[in-house]
Image (cartoon, rainbow, N blue to C red; front, side, top):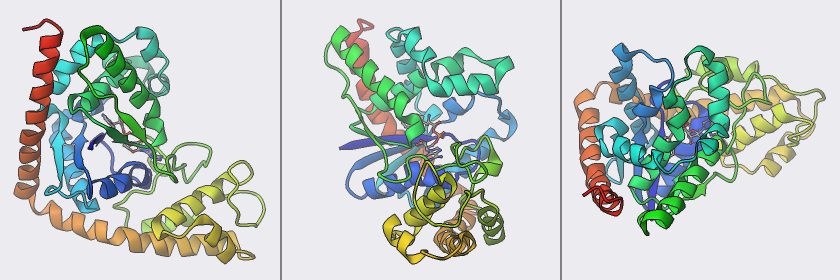
Length: 324
Ligand code: TYM
């Protein structure tokens, strides 16, 4: 099966990105043909700094590798290196209803956040994402919950294109993690952990003292009991989810272990788990930062391999649309 997923280069990876996307990727790359993309063209739909943009992209490649994405097994590449993404986006534009785009939750949220400068790029963002996915005849798209609506649009567009021009695209399936599809903010457990609010995040590169500070001050709920209950105890439920995902211990077992113990003990223990689990990523990242030539070579080779698949799909698409 073919797997495709991507992450925007701007902002450091947080544990939500790790659990929602990368943790799934690490398992999938053992068995399937995977493409993992750094989606730079998505990142420029909101304000960004062109001067350090190449550095930001390089940092994201380092983070992918530090997490254990293996370039021997998976194709790691930068979206803009493969021009077919923009070509397919334009072609899919022509069959995308405006109504579908205006219903997108992420568009509504971001256009509120960047009120003065809502560009057409932000509106058309989900079409570029559909192009990313369909270009590689993807079977499965492993993402977090916030991307579900976008993957559904990709499915809709694949079906619409196939109906109109004849069978061309595979219809991709969404893959959400069973636990952790939506990690919540440490400061407000009713909101998603999001890099646009750095205070809400625990970053993979955070040093042990920062991890301690962020977890010990994480917002919890009234009462003392340590139970998983999203309605009554969203803060504790979020911490239990994170604990379970990084310790591989089921939530039920954690509830038993922490029975009669306070929130502070849970937090202290979680700090230990996180410091230990994230240490190898931090260490590997520091090593990779010194290997610029190697990282750039991974991206160049990745783009070459991705392009072969992309070009083959585009030959078919152009033919079907009467463009050759
Ligand atoms: P991005 O860069 O915002 O997020 C990257 C991945 O992290 C997941 N994620 C979370 N998962 C759980 N809890 C959270 N709090 C959390 N926050 C983020 C996201 O669901 C995502 O899987 N548009 C996409 C990137 C993209 C893409 C694609 C993904 C572009 N083309 C094609 C898949 C296929 C985005 O902005 O993700």
